[in-house]
Amino acid sequence: MQVHDVMSTSIVTARKTDSVRSIVIKMMNRNCGAIPVVDGDARLIGMVTLRDVLLPLYPNYGEYIHDNVHSRDFVEMEEGYPEALGRKVEEIMSQNPLTVAPNAPVLEAASYMGLKNFRRIPVIDKGMLVGMLSIGDINRGLFFEKGMRG
Image (cartoon, rainbow, N blue to C red):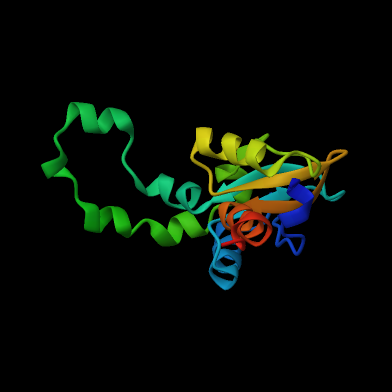
């Protein structure tokens, strides 16, 4: 089974100049945790995950080392969420994300995803974003092809 057999092709994307707020709305509407970022030619230039959205709220690693956790005001940190939503996608996106080709075996893609602890990965053909592959897509495809017996 190849990636193109199970990938999703109805892809919601973002532009690097979009607000983080707009990408979070897309994530909530699609019930997904990652949105690919494309340029004007639909070439993949980055990915934004829910983790990327929340990361600016966390203290820097050095602050944990030099101060103990009890001095953290997590309620105050939460107050920074509206400011995080006002940022531009390009400020938080991961550039040059790991991708997979549509003709790759699904378990090869799953192994890349497992190594990086990704739940989804963009599918690229000749530099163009053509789909997204999720762990759910892989499981569903394998089940209907191999798991229906018995």
